[in-house]
Image (cartoon, rainbow, N blue to C red):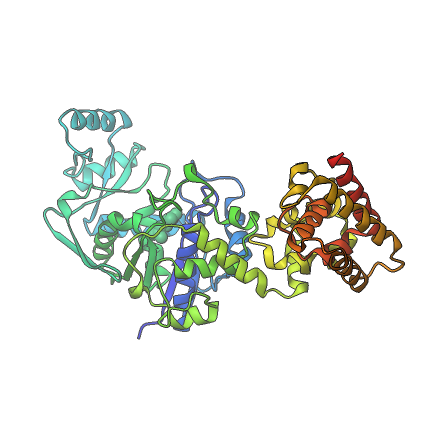
Length: 478
Ligand code: GLU
């Protein structure tokens, strides 16, 4: 079997999309499965759309997701450089090959001419395409104009009426008629290659065996196949991966419906391990249907041909569930480390060791920390009516509060044991309605209906503040 070499080829034009990260994971896992290499290549030939710091951001986000590449920027490798803007000489040389083989031609059409051709085609309800005006220029004429310094691009000479086929691991054989394909620009007037030229040259020179990329590139693939053929190169295996749909299942996942960048999900408090696991089960299932999958298990089992060719929704409920599962798997030390960036400045740092175990069960994302812990330190706010739920009378509630305060004040040692024994004893002795009493107490102490276990919570809040809050509750009822 040929050496498996996969690649991810992002362009530094903005933050990496979760869909790209999911595709990257597939390329990574497939290479690992077969003991091959996963290559990171930066496709930065569109200097207009490039964003500052884009290349570094790509590398950083891959690392934050816990993944890495075998060859690429910062790593080197036998087939470098791995940044396309550093490979311009290679593209120029290769494109000469195509000119010599008569598979490509110089085009001197001005922007104005191209615009008017397009306008006319549109007016005639034709799909805009290059009218092949320069295709018939003789090589000698073209050379003379180049030598005279005229501006040019180089275009692919797309053969007429030819069937172009390629195999897609998800969809089987796909065939396009070449008449539908424009004479694509390969080399731009600024000497930069277009995506189509650079991607084919690099995938070939970097010995990429399998190309797994988003399905939005399917329509580009016949152009690439033509280029492989023009160069006389063998065509790699393709797998075009369906795009994610928005969480509501409608339309492809887009910024207008919420966050889409791989970084933003980490900033919202999703764990990279949970994100990766989520990517794994979108459109693919393990043979035993288990949904919690480690990276190693995925590497062992993943096959691109088992991927669904249907788009699936980016189901946030499922992601929340998975994230909770992964949060609960963390050791105390791991959670403490990971949650650090999410902790509000006002949170009393000395309480973290006591608080974390109390809320670990209830965290959906790391960012939930503040919402779940606010009442431990900041002023609480709630409707007085909440204190009266299920109560026979306001007077009784006030009585319950007063006696609880008295009890707490009498405790010489503020311990979980004393709290539990004292308060439970009081409730039983007085025969107060248990549900009513403890719900009322929870509200008075925390302002919330759902909290970690009450006595543990009281322990953390401390005697002084608990008593203060119980007195406040009495005031609220006055
Ligand atoms: N540079 C392209 C992108 O930004 C790569 C597409 C491909 O994988 O061929 O997605």
